[in-house]
Image (cartoon, rainbow, N blue to C red):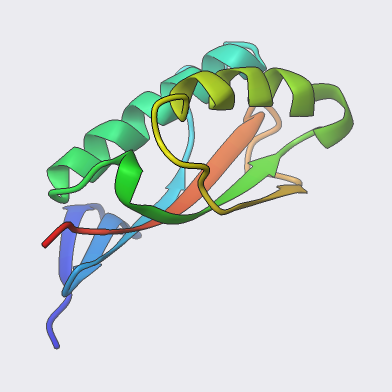
Length: 118
């Protein structure tokens, strides 16, 4: 089975597709000066675009892993933006953990597994 990689850089690809399975690399905001709500919304916008590039959308997400820099401080605010993002689709499987991220200004990062509709 072949693997299609999209948005490839020297170190990694943002998207890997095999058959109907779509994996997104860890996604985060491009403006790290935003607060948790701003970073979360910007990250969701990027995820929406990458899913579209892969031929799918958030309604076909199989799982999301959420990494928060400070879960105690940011969980409620993250969920406000999450709830608006998924308001019109069935509840998505997800895991949420606190993590030390690569840059102290990164407040949230998400990895996504989705399928391409038949």
